[in-house]
Image (cartoon, rainbow, N blue to C red):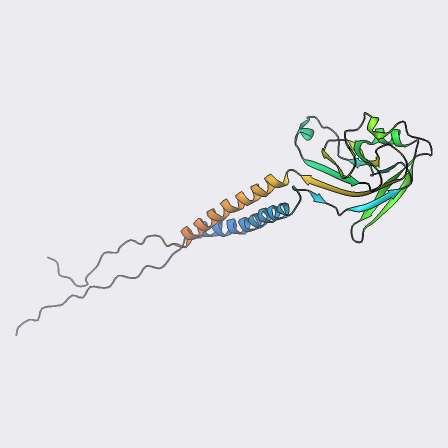
Length: 250
């Protein structure tokens, strides 16, 4: 009897189990969760700034009127100098006040509150308080006496910043530490002040903050995506050796 040759059928290799890298995957997801809010915040701040007039957040124009010599703000307290003088050099914010009088030349000024009270107190003035935006309402509180001013406001030397003349007058002032009062008067100091006023403020840190949030969000987004891609790719499998059962030894 002729012996039939024995056939050897190779055993197919076992398909490797698909594996992921969980640590990079988890870190990537966490980075995305942080990146998206940062990007949205940066883009939102940038959009808001683009809608503003030179970055200023301003109130609508409203007409104020008083029979006294001036309309003054409440005391604006911006803190005091600390151990270092970085505060006034930091350009933290800028204040803007615009005024237009239909009847006469207008004066707009800002000065330390103590100097303003000393100047306006003898003649009496109205102080603005309790302002609401919608609907617009503002309370005027009478301050000072019933005497006369010591000269028109344009002749005083204590003003920190001022603007005067016909038409719209705009005062722009970089925020400084201290307690200040903003004042609107007739340029000649006569009583009976009527003016259309608009106030605004620009926080100079908003622009770099928007850029910082946007750039940080973009970097974290790219890093998170790369980590997720790396984490979902399986490690390179090693090629198993092909075995043949019952293969006779040579």
